[in-house]
Length: 87
Image (cartoon, rainbow, N blue to C red; front, top):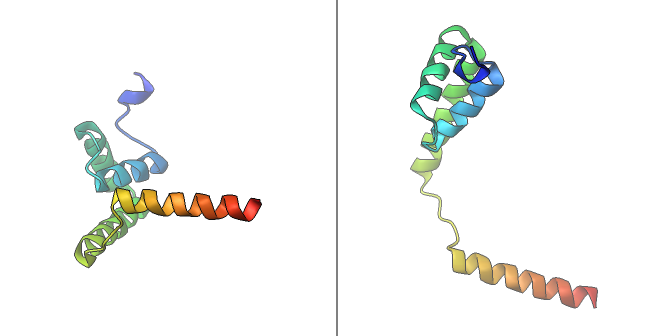
């Protein structure tokens, strides 16, 4: 059996899949493996629970972020100031 087809995954991989799931990037097979792992690993269950709480808190907080053009303008201003400082 190849390494990719293993049903039982180590904690490091389970945490990675949990993080991917937070952004809806985990495949069905990865989710199955994660859920099997969570059956017998209390530490990863706690990690998953904390990750879920964090995701819900961030969604609930309605955090505002800069749009792409504002980020680009800020970067240009920073690069200009850095160039002036180095001259």
